[in-house]
Image (cartoon, rainbow, N blue to C red):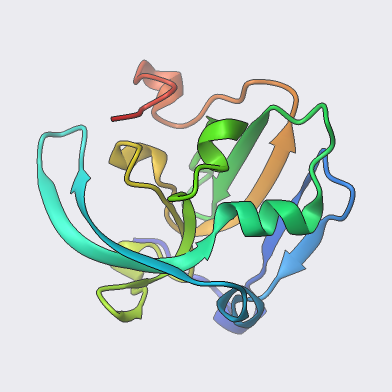
Length: 157
């Protein structure tokens, strides 16, 4: 499990093909509109678990940065040894896609991707990037850690 060297200095960097790139501290993300839902998480390895996730809808952050018309994809980057994965923009903008900062009514712990992770019940677990560090809007279909090893790029349920 990776650890932040300075948690107080952590910021989510959101940029790429956007009009207004931002660096968001966790306090600012927590102050944005919140969603919460209890879902059955599906892992590509065959296990499932029921949990409650809470965070800011991804579309709220996207609207804040104003993606350019050319942006068709989103790359999510982790501070976990270069881990990343790419999504198509419609999947990222789905109402259930969130930047999660809470798990089972508590702040995320490192084993669940603290301080922030991507979460969507419409995707398999490997698409839900833990330890989120940066979001980049792009016009080019990005790869990703598992996708580059042959896992399905879409990774949807």
